[in-house]
Image (cartoon, rainbow, N blue to C red; front, side, top):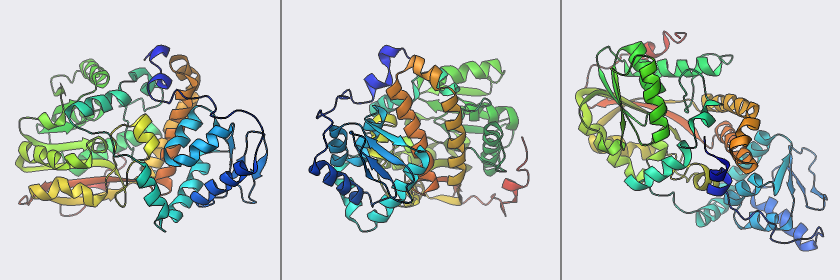
Length: 425
């Protein structure tokens, strides 16, 4: 894990943590601007407390209260709420009195209502820049920013079985995180109808959990691509420990350079980093490597309609990230005459996954703060809570798309193969 000198605050959060204006006095202009801010975001039932501890807004059905600790925080938030709330919360210039997830859910729902008038969405789009590019070099920088924080950090709150940093699948609401991640891997494998001896090319392998699981439980040969050095080192070590290194080749390279042929192409949780401008590139890769009777699956965060990633998350947490709509994802399949066989949306499973991650994250904040600083701890708390709220309010979706070559007739007659063994572990 990185040292304090390489901390999140130095890399990712604005160093401008000083109030832009000093003094505890509150003017009539301050109060007016605070009420205007609430108008902009749709007047959600949240309270407003100012830096002199004055409770300016206190609705009867108040979910939580946003506390501004200096005048500059209010002024900065007004210039771009979508971007600056994250930095102001991370630096504790804004705090939330109450539960963070319900607070964010309430704000998201109110802003969604306002966006339907067209004004809010135009305002956000005018403010927000396009995601950072996912070219060959750009992808290296983007992935390093997020995934090379240190394996120890992720081990504190991901599952113990396969280190899956993607949506789990809960056969029952009572399932543990470990049970749900194992169920997700079986769920994906059954959709792909994996057979012993087949070759699978994986784009974006994370810490290698899917590759090891498929090799161990389904007898396939894996060729997995990744550009995160930290993840690959972990994946190779684990595969060797489990005696699976002869079945798995972990390749440090961009997915665009994938070579050879495969029976199955799979990508779980990587498309968010590809960027819509490169979906045709990904489709060409699939077309190049997939055998005539091949099939594949892409698992990705998405949206109901095109929209940029939250500006703060794209800038501070996931540079280059973009969750696509189904229509945008078709740029992978249509130009290469690939047939979509099945689409499943499991967004509420991701909300539950994130709840489990958040529980474990909070249990380890003391350890995390020893390696990073308090800005980092608050920023990642906000990221996890905001992601829960995005899935529960329908801001984000989770799509699994199964596809094959157009002339492949060896496809399932029904979906029974996916669910008949759902309790398998």
